[in-house]
Length: 285
Image: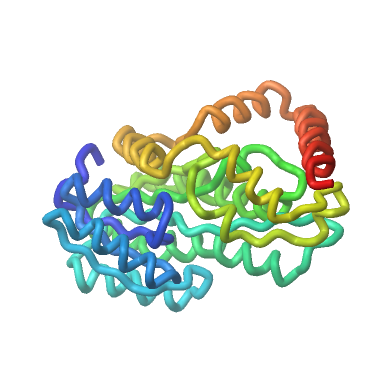
């Protein structure tokens, strides 16, 4: 798909962050957009921004963890726009906890959004993309879908799952010579509100993190790439039919680390995390 002009794209998590910037960037390229999010206020703001361009913009409140809502939305998109060519399964949340201390309800919450939301979006829209004669599925994994990080076991689990699911999807689409393709996106630290709105468990104190809110702020400070830059990188990846899109220097370098030392990078990461958490603990006291 070299051009987005007069295509139709469905985007989850469009109320802020990369979902919003993808919507605006696509609208600026002449692409009609169907937007969804659970944040209706943020969604309305995105609709106004994308609507500044001469394209059709529709929106709906959708909880991607609810299969029936995703399927109903996919049908609505095709009814309202006549067709659909792209689906960006972008909605996501974060969760930080120790494995020993994590709550199963939190694990089920993040898995429902980050993984099952991608599965539902893929399966609900794939028949419509095939019917359009050409299409592309873009699933958002993460840098943490490439290597594991302490305190991020639930997030790692969801993003590794998205990676495996999307890579298998791409292979199946090629095997069957489908007119639809797929790309897995691995953002590093992107300046969005995902860390601010994520869940942080008290069990992190077992790692020496005494101030959980300060930990959240420190994590956010490491984000370097803007959501606008990330959206442009993703769209270029779609245009060149990339299997994998890495966003940010951190994603590129840490991907290289796990490629060079797949069996021993864990020690490097653990040592770095120990130093960081120790520094945060001293600072808090």
